[in-house]
Structures are given as structure tokens and as C-alpha cells.
Amino acid sequence: MLITGATSGIGKATAEILAENGYNLILTGRRKEYLEQLKEDLFRKYGQTPLTLNFDVRDLRQVEESLDSLPHPYNEIDVLVNNAGLAVGLNAVQDGVTDDWDRMIDTNVKGLLYVTRKVIPGMISRKSGHIINISSIAGKDPYPMGNVYCATKHAVQSLTQTMRMELLPYGIKVSSVAPGAVNTEFSTVRFKGDRERADNVYKGFIPLSGKDVAEAILFIISRAPHVNIDDLLIMPTAQAFSRDISRK
Image (cartoon, rainbow, N blue to C red):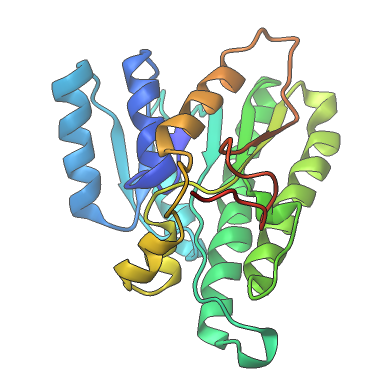
């Protein structure tokens, strides 16, 4: 099982819950020291030693070389969790920063495609496998100032649906998980390290945790072979849609 963006947030929580449940893991991330620490933690807590790959999903050469380096049986990936993703900036289109746009498009869309394209052929040859794409409520309900991020997550939703159709003849499952507000590094990255601004996003209500989403991912991959969860929207109780949050 391969999890991208495993060094924090949803990816890290997913690695932890799957290791606890005995899954063999391949974990990827850009921050090597975080990967190594996670590897040590999973062995200490659960006796699991994941294989780690340090690369950036935005770099096609790194993706190909890293996945081509996998030894047997790790190269027979049965589950892919496309978790790597981010939001950067919160601006109207006319005030948008093109570097921010590139980071989001390259990570959330192209990075997902690069990794998936390398993994699918093996699944097709074995006529089995499961691809889980981490989307967002932003992929269903766009909001002002979130233009490009919302567009990338709409792309993830569309890609998931088309993969589902294209891979249907091969018995490969394809799922989307779309969380609402999750208290991870997401807002800190979006606001470029401004912790006070990031913390304000989650004030007055209880957001989802990475573990909440990880539990949903575990549910999806542990269904019977004839069951596919196509699209799962998971929200905090206090959040109805993108902008509808009840704060106290």
C-alpha cells in the first residue's frame, strides 16, 4: 500500500491507523527527516517497518525513478492513497500569485496523475487494486478566494470518476474521500506560516482531525471485494458546506 504525502496531517494519520491494523506500507514525502521519524514511530508503536521514498510528486523524473526502485513485493502496489496536496494563498483571481497557482496545480493534479500513471499498469496486469484520491469539500462547493485550489479539487473529483469508468473492466476500485475542515498543517501552509491566521480558521467549532479521515480510509479499503465506496463526503458536525460553519 502506497500513501503519498505521508509526513503530516491526513497522510500521517492514515499511515498510523493502517500500520496499527497490520497493513504493509510504502510512505512518500518531501521531508526526509519527517519520513524517517515516522518510520521509527510506526516500528516502536506497532512493530511495523514501512518502506519510505523521499521524493516530490511534482517532479515526474523523481516519481518514476523512486517507484521503479521498489523491490519485490513492494512493487506490486495493491492500494494507492493519493493524499499529497496543498492550498497556497487566499486571493481573488486578479490578485493571484502565479507561483502559488503552479504549486497547487503541480501537486494536486499533476502529481496525482504522475503517481497514478506509474501504479495503474501493475494493477491492470493483476486485475485488482484500489485507488483512493483525497479530494475536498472544495471539490464540490467552490468558495470565494479559493479559486485555483477549488479548481484542482474539482479536477480530482472528475479524475476519480473517469478512472472509475476506465478501470471498471479490470476490477480495480476507485474512491474519492472529500473532507471538510480538517485541523492539520493545511491552513498553516495556505497562509505561508502565519500560525495565528491559520488557527483562526478553526476557532469556535470542532473540526475534523487527520485521524477522523484516516478512519474513513480504513473503512473504504476494508470493504468486501464486491463493494466499492465511490465518493465519501466527511464533514465536522458544525460544518454544513464550505462556508456554512456554526461557531460558538
